[in-house]
Image (tube, rainbow, N blue to C red; front, side, top):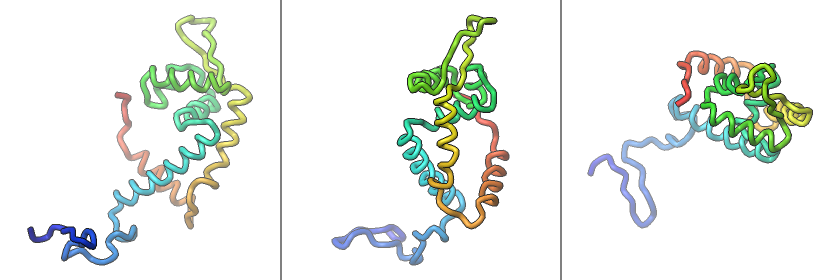
Length: 160
């Protein structure tokens, strides 16, 4: 059929109207670039966290605890995850000695989650990872501002 790629003994052939170099990132639409960049950075970030026995979800919890949140319910709400998901994340952090979870003396149904010294140290160690993990860009502040603009403009996601 006209316009379809064909395959022969030498491998797949390009479509007749395909320009040379279309596989180069400078020819990609913005959505494809963002997706590819996101996947590359995410892989590097997850690998770096895994080497430090952390997960991205665990890092988010440590960050919220550093900001002063202490309710497991609030942690789930602000992380935009279900309560059970947050419970599993806190369970893992507790097993690793990064947080402690105690019953609230004022309300037995509520648990107070606190970051431990080991948790503080783990969070601080990861803070410096950005420079190590993320590829160099000419203007990181401009990239950060653009990403904040994109994320801020996106509709808030509700937990499923």
